[in-house]
Amino acid sequence: MARRENPEINAGSMADIAFLLLIFFLVTTTMDVDSGIPKKLAEKTEVEPPIVKEKNIFQVSINRNNQLLVENEVMELKDLKDAAVKFIDNGGGIGNPMPGKEAGAACDYCKGAKDPESSDHPNKAIISVESDRGTEYGTYVAVQNELLRAYTELRNRLCQEKYGMSFDELEKAFIDSARKDESLRKKVEDIKASYPQIISDTDPTNVK
Amino acid sequence: MSKFRKKKKGMPALSTASLPDIVFMLLFFFMVTTTMRETDLLIDSPRLPSASEVKKLERKSLVSTIYVGKAKDAKYGTGYNRIQLNDKIATPDDVPSFIYLERDNVSEAEVPFMTTSIKADKESSVGTLADIREKLRDVNALKLSLSTHKGSVINK
Image 1 (cartoon, chains in turn orange, cyan):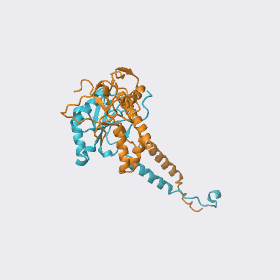
Image 2 (cartoon, chains in turn cyan, yellow):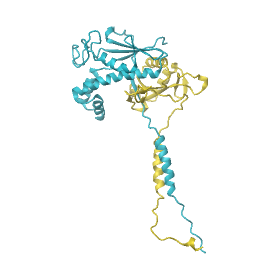
Image 3 (spheres, chains in turn orange, purple):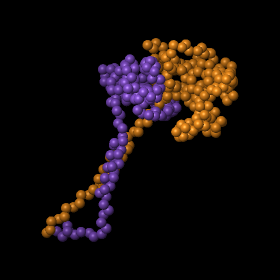
């Protein structure tokens, strides 16, 4: 009998093994897109901060048990956004001059109650967050997020009225144009100036 | 004996021998492009808080990361307020030198665009954050990002 031919090694299952590895790596790879809440810290200067009227400050305090005190009233986290919207959008007086304008004017796009006891103008409305050293970071971030949501809501509303699209869409269009489209840039800046995010973090008590 | 010798005639099987090569190529591509975490975490991987109003961090090379959380090593205690800079546990006082070191790695013109990303566990305390913030203000590293997962907040 003639010598048997060497049978070919079946390489068909090799593909399966490789695929298995491939899929394993595909699944376990987290393309870790780092995202977070942006914050801009204040520069350290010798200049005394200007005195701000009490009514233009929205005081949010968080105690060490993660409870909220908003304008001297206990509040749940879920109500914070609406309270902040109400405060920012009040428009009860004359605001700071808008960029390119000489004198300040009343807020003509605000839909708030125009209560003279609350904030004058969105660009004067300051949100002050005070937290205890023992406050949980998670709660702190949640509060910051709720406040930012208030601004987002207002900006979206104004942008929808003025330009017929939400602020997110507008910003995306601007970024997609590689930040070069001048008319979009104007629109973005206009909305940002109309509702500037003024959130101040008061240092927790007894910081070194 | 003869049944071993008998060969079926018919369509020769389609050779799949090159398929593994293709797949391996894909596999290597993914293995190479996957970036692993550059620093070993000395703290338990922080359970980041969730938020919906997040912005993506662009320009990874300009981001310096500060981790806050519970140290893996028991000798640092069990609190959630240990700070990790590069690959060692540090104190807030070490933050300025960490920032200076990070600044050396980028060109002068890009320093104002550098962002500090804080990855803190949700159970860590705001006091730690405030300490870091003070130190960052001291060295004029004013762009800060509080790292979060994207998601809804109110579902505790």
